[in-house]
Amino acid sequence: MDISQLFYDLFFDYTLRTVALGSAILGIVSGALGSFAVLRKQSLLGDAISHAALPGIVIAFLLTRSREPVILMFGASIAGWLATLFMLNIIRTTRIKDDSALGLVLSVFFGFGLMLLTFTQRLPDATQAGLDKFLFGQAATLLQRDVVTMAIIGTLAIILLIAFWKEFKLITFDTEYAASLGYPVRFLDVLLTTLLVIAIVLGLQTVGVVLMSAMIVAPAAAARQWTDKLKNMVVLGGLFGAIAGVSGTLISGSAEKIPTGPVIVLCMSAIVLFSMLFATNRGLVWNWFRNLQNRRHLRAQAVLGDLNTLAMQHPNEERGHSSAVLRAMSTNPDGVSLALQQLKEQGYAQELGKDAWALTQSGLDEAGKSQEKEA
Image (cartoon, rainbow, N blue to C red):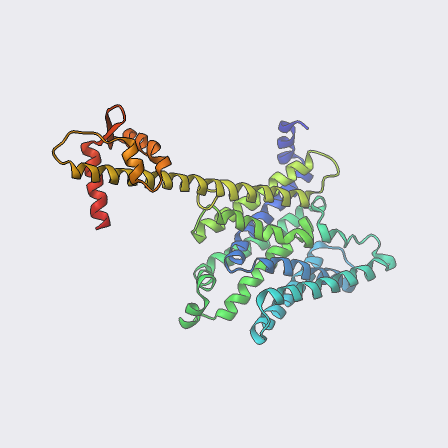
């Protein structure tokens, strides 16, 4: 498909524009709130809540016989919130660890939801309900009113996040210190988790209960590779989520029968992979390059020190020293030649004759500074 036509449709085609806007809103909200879940080592919380939302969706339909997204989302919110409270109480009142409580809640709620879904599909008036679409999402069904609802709820969640920024930051990094200062830690914990439930519910129609946890964890995980500051991580998480949402929508819209939700998750996975490799803070490639530079610097400093030692042994002589002598003094003989060339480029060493090396005045000064630091 023509790329220019695709971008034209992004702004002027109703369906593509609506899905892209909804996906971008979902990415911003889930990326921002997911940063706290990742930092609090509650990455599986999003998985548990999204799966736990399924029985809420089905029960909301059974009670109202309505397929209105707002009603189904309300049921999902209640189920997700109840699952969160169950899990927090299990952790607080028993000796069951966090990961075990998450797995317990996820399996119980999701199993109950699948049982209800199977029962509901057999009802005469439920054959066209389309509740199974919530398993993997169906972004193409988003309407403008759905996007407006997502924007309003998402904006309220972000406003609450900003309003309680200091408190959320404190309980994220040091819960015990927050409690010692008199902060209502349990209330703040429930409030932050409730905001996470809202973010998850917003995405159920787009990417579904199975894949929604990826939209919570992946943007934050990618952002963590680029920064150590919470504010930057939250902003980057929202940005990466929005980019994945829009790019996934465009790719899905470029061909027929490509589901939007899974493509959005794949785009987000590509961003995570790129960040893990090339992020300037924690990226593997960047760390490899930084370690290489450190090794070169340490090797050059060692040869600089050896040349300075030889210069101090012959204080009144203008003479150079062979690389063979330096290799005999070095713990890494193979790197002496490269270190000498590096020192020469830096102006710290000079070659007086064939394979006769000595320090320049700048090299002597640098060696003196290194000795002072070591002392």
